[in-house]
Structure formats: structure tokens, C-alpha cells
Image 1: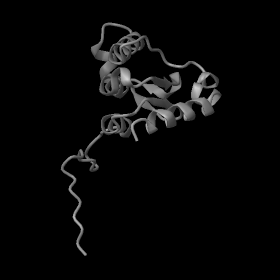
Image 2 (image 1 turned 90 degrees about the horizontal axis):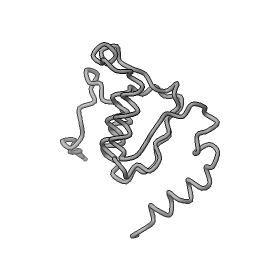
Image 3 (image 1 turned 90 degrees about the vertical axis):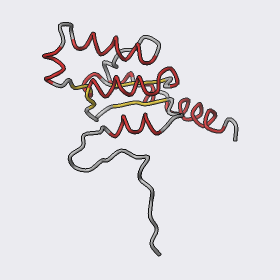
Image 4 (image 1 turned 180 degrees about the horizontal axis):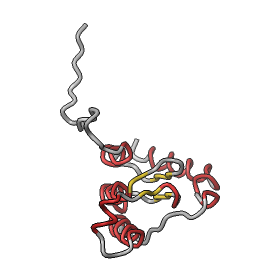
Length: 128
């Protein structure tokens, strides 16, 4: 039994590539509507990419402030405050105001997990 899987639709994730798994998630999961990031370092440019990929369909994007990191190249290339630029670019990508969560206690997926789960299940089962 020689099953061959067609991988042509997927990016090359070999060792010499640096694709972020969360960007790939946003790219492949077209119905992604909630993403909460805590305890995983995400580069600012990848956060902008996620916002642009999912746009206004991403209803909740919660990222703790300590989870965001900036590339030294990004910092050197900008004449503006990188945090302000990140907020502006993510807000533009989502089509609404956005900001990082300052305290993990404020992450709604931790404070109201049942409500989010119910809403996601309802959304997922529409049209089935």
C-alpha cells in the first residue's frame, strides 16, 4: 500500500523555513473566529499577518502583551513607536480598534470559556 499525499497546497515547513504556525492556522482555517494567545511568543509582523488574513471574520483576537515580540530589524526600520504601529496595523487588518491584553486575568476565553465555546459551536453548526 503506497499512499501518496499531495502536499502541493501546503507551504514548505522544512528546517530552513520560518513560517509561524499561527499564521498558517489563520491562512488555512477560513472559519477561524477566535484566537487567544498567551504563553507563546508571536512576532509583531506575524500578528499583523494574522489580522490581515482573517480580517473582520476574526471576531476575537486576544494576545497578552508579554506574548508579543518585535524583530530588531522592525525596530530599526521604523521612525514611529513599534507598539503604536502594531496596534494601528492590526486594527486596520481587523477593521476595528484592537489592543493587546495587559493582564492574563482579562482574557475572555479564561473568564468566560463556556460562553465562547457555546458561541463557537453554534457558529460551527450553522449550515450543517
